[in-house]
Length: 318
Image 1 (cartoon, one colour):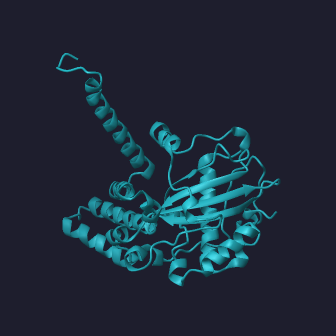
Image 2 (cartoon, helix red, strand yellow):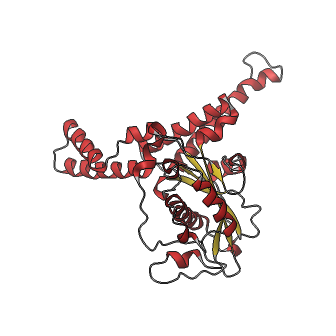
Image 3 (cartoon, helix red, strand yellow):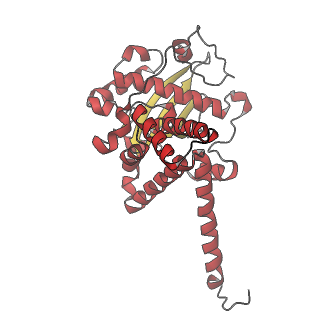
């Protein structure tokens, strides 16, 4: 089994042991086009596919245990057993990088790049899925790590001792471009402020100039795009090497559609959290944690309000 890292390391193979986390270093910089960034308004929604079956079987929700983890410790997953040698943050970062390599090559039809990186059966199904798409749809498949809002391990309780991991990503195409514009504007605004030149007109000028330079209008990117949920299954062999076994994705709107009006409400909530994350420039998981906390507080307040009536207590004596 060839190691994923052997194909991606710039200075020779990276070595992996069963106690080392997943890590990826591309042989050349990954490039991501802006075509995906404006697809929701000007083209098709992100295509749904799943090399392991139907898109409906993809993991698209955190689930109550991971929601509780976000509330308590600010992240979806707790630490994995030390003997597995998989620190969660490092593993997830490596898995996102692996997904970026695989989806970029698949979208470009560079199948030779995936030999030894993707399991043969998955590669065949992925090839079929890509060939069934239009060129525009394929451009909506590449995962840019800069667009990832958060990721988590979906099968930490059933992963064969850390050797068969299913990673789920929640991403927003164009988010990395929005963040880049925000950073550029923030730096130039700080310089103008230090020089005593910051005025509303100067701020507007800086913002407009950076939007024109990058070709990114944050408001249009936000309004035009759909959140995407990706599923990636990675398996580790006896020598510590990893192979991608499954790849799939679905747009948030399509994932929530079976829930009807409730699904539309959940999608609205996710976009609201995304908007706060962009507007306040706060870590997305911090925004999600606060939102979950306010939900629980509201439910608790409703419970305490209804409790006296449920117990047959009236008046203001309590």
